[in-house]
Image 1 (cartoon, rainbow, N blue to C red):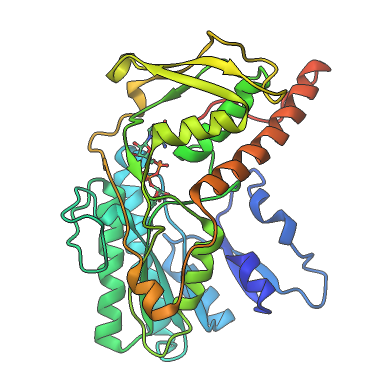
Image 2 (tube, rainbow, N blue to C red):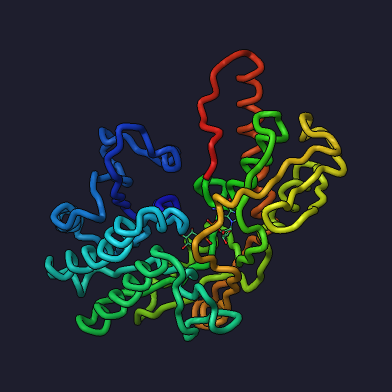
Length: 357
Ligand code: GDR
């Protein structure tokens, strides 16, 4: 989003949480030295759990647009840390809206809330559209449901330009390593180079509507440029299983897989290796197993979005297919895995953790 807005000529202010480690890897390429006079990307220390901090930052910046993309965004982790998830994802949204109102910015500042297809949870209708009833299935989704409604409420109560983008899963090579697509592309790339032996997965029958983050960011911006605020579903309208995503990712590396067994006993065995992308893999290798540790206490089995409203009202259609996105992610992870394999070959320590959640 920051990259997109900078390209449009915006001055962008981001909020980053304090950490004793550097954690700006995903924006380092657009980082600008604070000593430069024309700095257009500015980072402020802050946290969605800290009202006075948010109010001070908004008061200093007086933003025209706020994109609330901040969250504890991992569904499985929200079962481990439900209270923190509620504080950041639900009350954090309220804190931002209240800060805008308290500062008298409600007629100036437009507000985008990152809503989610997780609101549909136990789906009531397929495909899911803006009018489909919600049935959240995790502490994350329940917190996001509060955030959805508080944004609607501030729009209705105070006439704020606040809207929800109900985004289905969106991915890219920058996706966090513990979300399923990246876990697969990174894990298989590591296996192809002999850095790992086996990928341990949860429910690979789950069905998702995966789009490319680049397409979705464009739509988020478009939503704030309308005459009146409205909520939109952002999705591709096509659904695949996690198992299919695994098959494509392996194929990008020249690896053909055969799945056998059922439930927790299911495995994937290599049947063929083509080309030179996977020198450490040979037919007969079992490179995927199921680990129940990755099952969720309540699962969202299937999600499929209907983006008709976005297409008709805003002329938005996704340009990158799920397969193209998968190929891009594998290619990036393969580059990294090859670099790491080279370091390992020369007896150097790997600058990464091989643990994936
Ligand atoms: P999701 O994304 O929960 O849909 O939420 P995730 O990629 O974590 O899971 C997608 C599906 O894959 C199944 N799965 C696994 N998931 C993970 N993370 N690890 C595994 O090993 C694994 N095995 C199978 C999951 O059970 C699930 O069904 C994402 C997040 O980005 C949210 O913040 C966002 O709101 C929604 O997408 C839209």
